[in-house]
Image 1 (cartoon, one colour):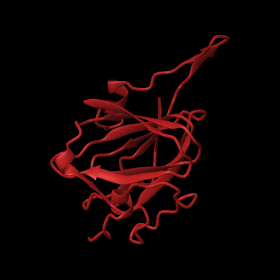
Image 2 (tube, one colour; image 1 turned 135 degrees about the vertical axis):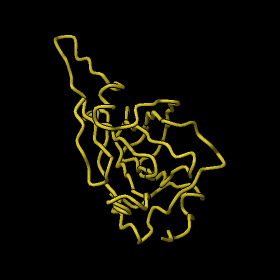
Image 3 (cartoon, rainbow, N blue to C red; image 1 turned 90 degrees about the vertical axis):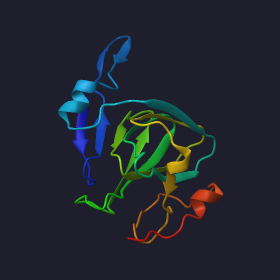
Length: 176
């Protein structure tokens, strides 16, 4: 795997190292030792899959409050998304910075989201599937989020949202 740092401290784009021949290719998507060498949390406690049927759907920006923070690896395995990581760690040198990138089933990139960062995505095609690996189990009582269009963050989404749930649409303005 090739780990490329982003503009958010501790967030990395993860590119597959493909080993191919006439049959296709094989690539490792996770290796504890490689994550350790990058200084990343290699623990995987839970894995999930999300399916979104409609292009323009926006999910996020979500995170879990302390002490249930989680790091995660996010990969789009079907379709195409604009993925966003937002740094909410008050002690981070990139506090309130974000990074956005395209993940899809062709580039096969993944993003490592550090614990303490919010995450969200917007579907750019119909029938999108996202695979997640998380370092902590989901804790419903610790779920939190920030509004997708809060001016404090200046996130530039590719298209106007077509579908959002009420919770994501109505998160309050972020207060430092």
